[in-house]
Length: 434
Image (cartoon, rainbow, N blue to C red):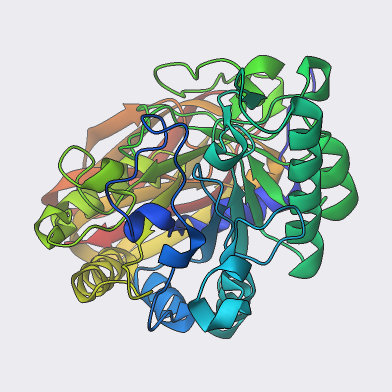
């Protein structure tokens, strides 16, 4: 069986390693709103009135956190749209913000360009309270509009989002999207036509550059998290639950690497799982130590980390969140800015000689991803003087595997590939100090 390979877009996505996902919706301005408990009530667009909305401030914060791409939640489950849409009047065009002439999505994409981040857009087809729709994207009995009309709304809005703002790096479907054969909108046809280069999180079966969910909102990947998978089409389109752990399958038939998302506020204590802002909750921010641990458990286990960023009712990332994101980005830089040494090569064994005995805190292993995931098992050893000692062993490397070590002085590191499906292509064996 030929080795499954990523698309160039999936390789570029993996190289980004960290992104942010930005949430702003009507419950920020009306925190008592619960759409599943208030099916017949919808907050007025008039409540959307941030006084100092500043997408440059958002993206500056994202860049400080070390993000290389950003995903804006353009329409969440309320159905309120952050751009002026022709599909209906439940959008920023009906709000007092900028006299109804503002466009948050347009501002966001422009700010991404200014700060060098690649833009992505979240659009939930599976849930829209304004249209009476809930998972997996079907109109509830007695609600408005009918399914055909709802599909037209989705197709109109996706066409707007995918044609007005230029090429998108990532398209994000929360819970997937109901396929046409089950009564859903023709999303795949639009994606192929309008944004074929985008990587797609939980997109419809047939998507060219698929991403999958890691299986939790803690940014915690399994110890071995493969980029390939055998998930059936139903799991891709959101009509079935994801497995408890998104570990993938080394013999999988699809290249669909895992994206590991988490809010930056405590998901058990903060408003709506930590994804949305509410006043008085700065104390729920995760510590830098917690965020760094999640970095190791996501980026260090062959995933991308997608970190939530809240926007407050003034339209800005709160000062406390700015400081925490900045400190987190600085912590990652301190860990990985200056390797003690690095080497690459092809074959079953790779040796890294250090210029002098060094206290190695972490070792990074990386495969050359365009050639696929070839490694199936490896061992890592370190040398002190003439004595080699085993340090770690594992199975999956993929884009990156980070291995933390006790601070022991080492003079050399040796990577041995003990099982592989083809000659291993190692992009890097790198050592980092404490």
